[in-house]
Image (cartoon, rainbow, N blue to C red):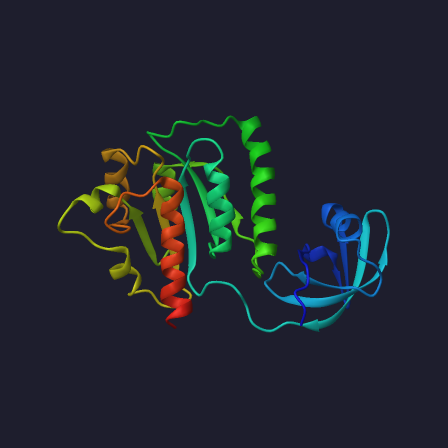
Length: 253
């Protein structure tokens, strides 16, 4: 099968054997891809299923396609990893969203911590969330994901700790662990995981977590781990963790 363009289509736009693509995606199909009736595209349903579809009709803001074949298999990670990322400076969070999506993250939580340099007010957050969702959607399409990772609202450490009970494993990527002779490595911990486990990994901002924040997380069953012997930049840590899990469970089998 040729490498067809993929689009994520909301559930309400699936009708029996027909899919309706609207808004920016419809514009992309007609104006950017210059598609025509008879061309094929892949449409992803929010439940994770994907289908090869054939374009039948196009208007200025709608593309209609019929389902030709449902695809088997999934590009989703067997371990559902949520990255709780301490807010970094500039556009580093966007980098984490894009590359983290490509590497299989299931969800992202932006975290406001004691040493976070940036602060977002409500108005700025609304605008940023719209851009963030576009980034993960496009990265999901590019990497042939079956689902788009979710992005939760900005949270603080206390709230994160209180609302973390639904995970099978909670990890704190703690730079102090990389400086000690006695530590738990990330590799040692993830070997104990099973497919379908839900994992929350918390990563600090540029200045790391304060001692008080680390204590709060550890008191709420977060396991401090070392991500290799070197101190990683905040935007590198999430990618290290996701790539390690992918190698362990998708490549080694």
